[in-house]
Image (cartoon, rainbow, N blue to C red; front, side):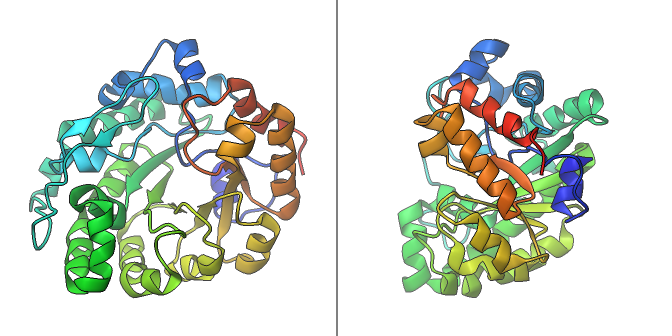
Amino acid sequence: MRVLSAIHGGRKGDRPPVASPTSIVCVELMEKTGVYFPQAHLDATAMAELAAAGHELLGFDAVMPQFSVQQEAAALGCEMDWGSPTMMPDARTHPARDLPEPAVPQDLDALLESAPMRVVLDAISLLRREYGDRVAILGKVMGPWTISYHLAGTQDFLLWTITEPERVKRFLDRLKHVTVAFANAQLKAGADAITLSDHATGDLVSPRTYQRFLQPVHQEMLSRIGGPTILHVCGNCADRLTLFADAGFDAYHFEWQVDSKMAVETVGDRMSLVGNISTPEALFRGTPQDVYRQARYAVEAGVRVLAPECAVALQTPLANLRAIAEAAREGY
C-alpha cells in the first residue's frame, strides 16, 4: 500500500501517495455527497460516507473519518457547539479550568463507548469493510496538550507552563491515557495508522517548552500505541523537527511555511514527512495551478506523502483539492 510504505520510509513506487492526516471536507464535498456537518460528526454512517469521498471524488490514497478536533473534549465533558456546514465544532465550556487536574474516568473502556468516541470507531469499522483492501484508513486522536486546551482553555493552560508547571504535568499525565486508549481502539477498529494531533504550535510553544513538558510524554505514548503514528503540530516548527524525530514518530505532517527541502535534509531517513501544501494560500485562495506547483515542489524535495498542510477551510474549491492527486499522478 502506497501510504503505509511511504510512512515507513519504503522504496518509491510509481508515484507519491496522497493522504491527508487532517480534514479535507469542504462545502462542495458535502454538496456532492449529500452529507453535511454537523451530522457527519455525530453519525457513523454519515462520517464514513463523507470520509470515503476523499478517495471516490478526489482520488486520495487514504480516507480519514474524523473531521474535528473535539471528539475527546466532548467525551470528557465539554459542552459542544457541533457547528454547521460552514462552521467547525467548538467547545463552549472548559470544565477543568478550575481543577488541579482533569477528571478522567478510571474505566477508559467505558469512555470509549461514549457517543463522541464510539462514532469514530464505528466509522473506521465501516471504512475498513468497504475500503480496507484499496486505500489506507487513517485514524486520528488528540494528544494531551490539545485536550488540555479544550478542558482548561488555551490561554490559561499556556500560562500554567510558567506559573504552575506541575499542574501542566498532571494534566498531561492524566490525559495521555485517553490518547493512547483511543488510538489503540481505532487501530483495533481497522485503522492502518494514527494521526496524533497535539497543538503545541510553533507560534505558541517554544522548542524548550516542548522538550521539557511534552516530548517525554510523546515518547511514552508511542511505546504504548500499537501502530504507525503521524504527528500533526501546526505552525512553523522548523526549529524542532529533530525533537519530533527523537520522540519516535514515524512521520510528521507539516506546514508550507517550513521549507520542504530544508525539512527533508534535517530529518533525513529518521522520519517521513507528510504535507505541505498551503491551505490558505494555494488551496483556499489559489488556483489548481498554484496547488500543482506547491505539490511538485514537495515531491521534488523528497516529501513522502502529499497532503494539505492542515485541515482545509470549508470554503476551499473542490478543483483545488483534486489538483493534489493530479500532481501526484505525474510521478517522481
